[in-house]
Structure formats: C-alpha cells, structure tokens
Picture 1 (tube, rainbow, N blue to C red):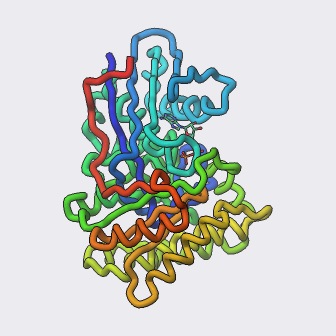
Picture 2: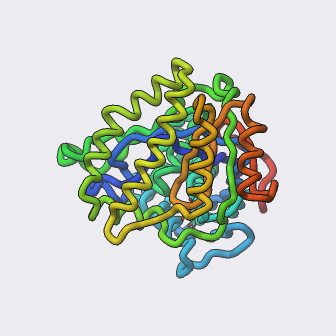
Picture 3: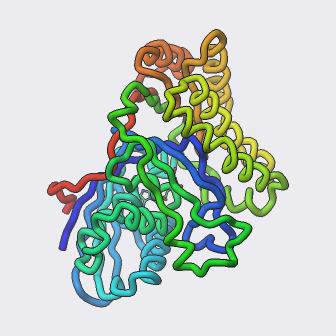
Length: 354
Ligand code: ADP
C-alpha cells in the first residue's frame, strides 16, 4: 500500500531540551513543552509498504540516503524503535520518499515535520496499523520514536499543542519502557481558528546546518549543566501553566514576555553546559535587542530561537508590517523574512511523490 502525507513543522514556545535518562532511546522528555503548529513550512512524505523481509529505501530531498550517511541514522533508529512495540513491521519492505519545503537540519525543525509526516504515512501504508490510524495520541507517540519535536506536529487539529512529558524523571523507576512510552504524547489545546490574530515571522539569519545537533546538545546539557534540573522544575511548575493561562485568557503581554523568557531560558542552559553551546550569533542578538527596544512602551512582539541562530518572531496581525520593517532593517533582504500563521495538523493527499 502507498500513502502520502503533508505535515507542518511547529515552533515551540516552551522548549523541549533533554531526554529522561531512563528512557532516552524512546525520546521521553524531562519536561512538557508547548508549540504552535505552523502553516507554510511542511514536509511531504510518501511511504510504500510491501510484504517481505524488512528493508528500507529512503530518499530525502531528491538524494538517496544509504545506511552509512548521517541522515540515515535517525530513520533507522525510528524504525528499530517502532519494531520493538509493533514487531509486524519486520514483515515489510518500506520505500520512503520525502521532501522538505524549507532548509533541512538548519534549526527550523525539519525533523519535526519530517517524522510527523513519516509516522502518519506509515500508519496509512501498513494494514496492521489500522487500529491506531485515526488515533492522534498513538500516532504522536509513534512520531516521538523518530524525533521528540515531531510528537507536537502530529495532532490533526494543529493549533496550540501540548506534549506531555508523561513521566516524572524522579519516579521513572516505576515504569517499564512500554508504559513510559504510552504516557508521553501530544494533543491540541487551542484550535487554530482561535489563534488567527497571531502572526509568526520566520527569519533566515543563517540557513546552513547547525554545528551541534539538538540531540547531542541536549544530552550534553542534561549531563553537565549544574542548574538544569532547577530550570526543568521552574518551567514545569510555573512557566508552562502561566503561558497556557495567558493564551486561554488572551493576555497578550504576558504571553509575549513568557515566550522570550522561555527562549532565553533554553539558551542560558546551553551556555551553562560544559563545554558551552552557543546557537545565537551577533545578528540573532541584534534582533533580540531591537524587539526589546520596540516593546519599550507596550509589549507587541516576542522572539524565540531554537537550536540555531534564526529568530522566529511572534506578534499580532496589526503590528506585522511594523515588525517586518524592523527585521528588514537588520536583514536587508525581503527573501529572509517569511510571515505565516498558526495552522492545522497533517493531512493526506493523493499526490504521491513516486
Ligand atoms: P532540524 O532543526 O532541521 O530539525 P536536526 O539536526 O535536529 O535539524 O534534524 C535534522 C535531521 O532530521 C536530518 O539530518 C534527518 O536525519 C532528519 N530529517 C529531516 N527531514 C526529514 C524528513 N523529511 N524525513 C525524515 N527525516 C528527516
């Protein structure tokens, strides 16, 4: 059977940084995270599954990926993880062709839309997955086995999505791997129709591949940062709830301030890692400071950065033009600025890639 899915990326406003050391292999996080599903930045993936001895053929952005290539590692791990929980996958030859419509491995979360599209297409293509096909929760768990941030790109309604950590790291010993896996999934908290006053502006500060992959960076933070667990506790107990409340009560200033606080929290955790990790560059910092200056009288915009130098700016539609002008002053190229909105989750299409 063959199936094709288009899945959006997502931008976290409360970040995922660090796996539960007991369940590292299956990407159970140390804290919950919160994101917006994003329109326009998408992955399209076609999966064909045929009965036979297990085999995988993978093409990404027009390039055949062989087992020894770096891009193959995540995909092999994903399928091996799935086989642990769904052994029938061993009886299939899988052919996958995938295309991202934005830069890969550059800090725009291609792994999020990539594994969300892969998981959604896989459950459509393999008949034994029929029972979980329409179960967003179970498919989000499946996508998590490929990449943590992909969990948040799965819910069909999209919008504001919460990914629950599921397991308190202090009591991990209470769970086996299957139980832990089933507890950590994502779902929609607010539907996109209710979030259309928000504008999300992506910038291209540097679209080259990042030097330290998120996976390696977060592992190093968990192992060496002496205040990491304090940050986890603070965000779980305070920042996450405050941010959800701000969105539900439409408290704009509080939301925007929390978005910046959460981004700065992540990057200070990186700096406090040994050896220290720096994802931001001088242009990133210039953008941060000009947004802060713009907010002097009234907070109207917020920046957030993932594991890379590219700023994502949140503002409201009525300020979008002002904020884009401010960014244009710094980046000097309209092509480096893309405005979009909160969107829906993945959808199936009949336009197969092969
Ligand atoms: P990003 O910020 O783009 O997520 P990462 O380095 O965290 O950067 O992840 C990039 C990796 O995710 C790629 O090297 C590849 O292994 C995987 N990936 C990216 N896009 C896809 C896709 N469409 N399908 C499957 N895997 C993908």
